[in-house]
Length: 314
Ligand code: TUI
Image 1: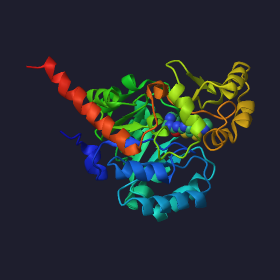
Image 2: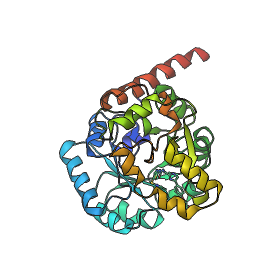
Image 3: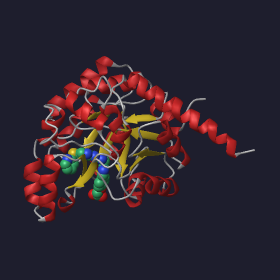
Image 4: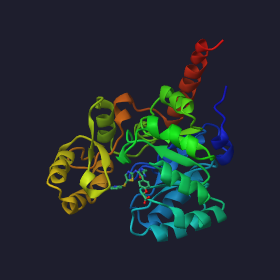
């Protein structure tokens, strides 16, 4: 059995598994490893300067012949420059997050780049489909980083009913059971972030990988509600500080306190005062393994669940 869907056809990939484009985390090493394993790796642009992101794309091109993508973080102030550069470099795909990518979709598509916006709501997904998006990534609030309001379980089937293009499920998926569940909801692929933080090829600091592996079921929290950009993180000193500022309704101070903190965590390994973005499924991550094994286990685990479900029929 193989999990072939409209997503695998759209992108020319073997497995319907998109690696989440996590800022300061998903660099070309991880991206190439996931793409070489038959999924699709996605470089996390975050607030990266344009020339550094170009270098990341070029390194990924040297490290894999397979398709890979770039996640455009739409809140970044130089997003127009980034899109101009991406139009020149032409990765196979972009995913977009943290905003509405409408004004970029036509140009990206004209350059032959597939566009997969991340949508936390039905209204945005419908709008993206009408603007020409190739597929929609429905990301539930189990996910790490910047999140919407709905859970994956509730969001994905509503998106499947609302649009005709493929829907990809994201948020809370870390093993084959989650992949099979996403398919049961009507998704044609999954986006997996947190599990790939603990890929061997992921270049984040080892302290972060260790913290993710230690995480228990209730170890994440949502910070920054008062800023309008809620962010799920593993609880630490910074998260508690932000929680207090949230309670005091001081969004500007939260923005100031948060600046540079994702790099402090992921690059420098400060897991107490850095921004430890991770999804609820951190608790389901038990080891550091090569990306190819993670991809293979997601696929074989899903196939096993799907086969075992046949006991309910006939
Ligand atoms: O983008 C993400 N996850 C992220 S971005 C990020 S960097 C950041 N750091 C601090 C504050 C904010 C961002 C860390 N993690 N996931 C995809 C995602 N997109 N989640 C939610 C959304 C979203 C939200 C609103 C997408 C579109 C949207 O549209 C609003 C509108 O204008 O219609």
